[in-house]
Image (cartoon, helix red, strand yellow):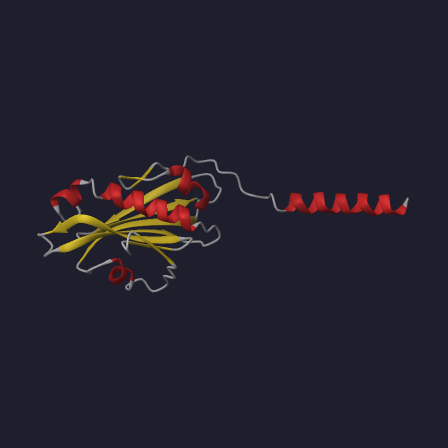
Length: 177
């Protein structure tokens, strides 16, 4: 009879421990389908966002770029950027990012990414008004708690391709302030 009692106690303990890991905060907000006017795949973005009540997006614009900051309640989980720069490729652009640990690349280095951040170079987005600057993109998750390199590759690829369809890219204009 003791072995049955031992197995029952072990099952109760395992069930109790399994319940401890499910204390995940519920998401009460809608995951955005675009960030600062650029479409994003909300299904791929959702796993990187924490639970919470309210999502807000703040856009900061300068002549050379736009940064889109996503906040969930008081947390800051996601930031996207579009920047005009004279860097010659994505490697040179990312070289300016201090904390980047990008261990994946796609499309011959046009996209550099990890499980929680990604950078890309647009095609045919050059600004004569900004002396030949090229348009680059960034998608950064502020917390590396959830990592998914394949999702980051897809997010940056789709985000960069969508940026190429904007008037900013087509006309090579500085960003409106």
